Length: 411
Image 1 (cartoon, helix red, strand yellow):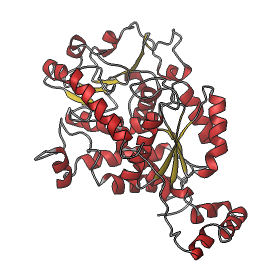
Image 2 (cartoon, helix red, strand yellow; image 1 turned 45 degrees about the vertical axis):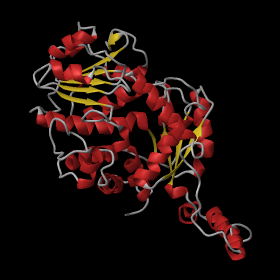
Image 3 (cartoon, one colour; image 1 turned 180 degrees about the vertical axis):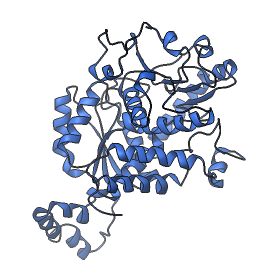
Image 4 (cartoon, helix red, strand yellow; image 1 turned 120 degrees about the vertical axis):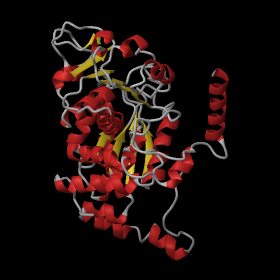
């Protein structure tokens, strides 16, 4: 395993270094190969669209790339699997995010790494550069600052802003969980849910599940101190919305008789003994990367009636926010939405649920070396490279934006 890990690292370093450094570049969309073209693109011709935009700011969407441009912005304080590595070290991750925007959704994205530990400084920086963009994708910002930053920017900007670690993750989990519950003969409103990890992803997942019909009375949220309890002081105020009055305190007590375990914390928290105490036909989303809360082989050996999802691509049922964020922004940008609201998130969940139950294209089967993929315990979400994600999800999200009144144009 160590040799394999080192081999992947060396290949990744070579991949990022050659034939030129990084994963993204700037390209132009208009010819610049004649004197006439130069005079139109820059001086004197460029003054014409500049004057139009000065008179009517909405014309920036007609004459510039703003409407298809997303800022991928971080301070590097909570990079997946690496922690607080700072803004510069987070740049390869943000470039990767920008590349996924382009490949999956045709969205141009620019990564911006900000040196700002204070939320106020981060917020002010983003507000000042926001006119450049049609949307803002916040990424890898530590909890609880991520909540404060996102809400402040949503309130003060008139373009879509989301912290993808919260909402992209939440949408993907919600869709996969609804499908898993159906397969296990259970319903969300009655399911007993234990979530380990009271940070950005954990809070957003539970908030969305409640919107979809989960009962707060059936939810136990666990942080590093144990079950979030009404008599205790949680790590931050955002988790207190899921505080409960209970005599239980430990993760083991929280897992007992649970229908669902959601892990967005760290490796090896869920032991085989804990898994054995879960309700019949349990659902385990062990999403810590690269090592999940329970080793998949160990989980399958412990419970034969299990549905398991991880964040990894080398096991069935990968839960990855790349299933969502490119198309969430595609749908928002296509109708020039002023924000991404709950209606749009729910539309994305419902579209993913339905898409999972439709026949899988042959090109996806070929890419994964599968003879067959169909809705079932080893297929509760579409594969990331499924070409139907863009038209299906983007359209559903655009329609939800229109119907909920946050769109500024029709499809």
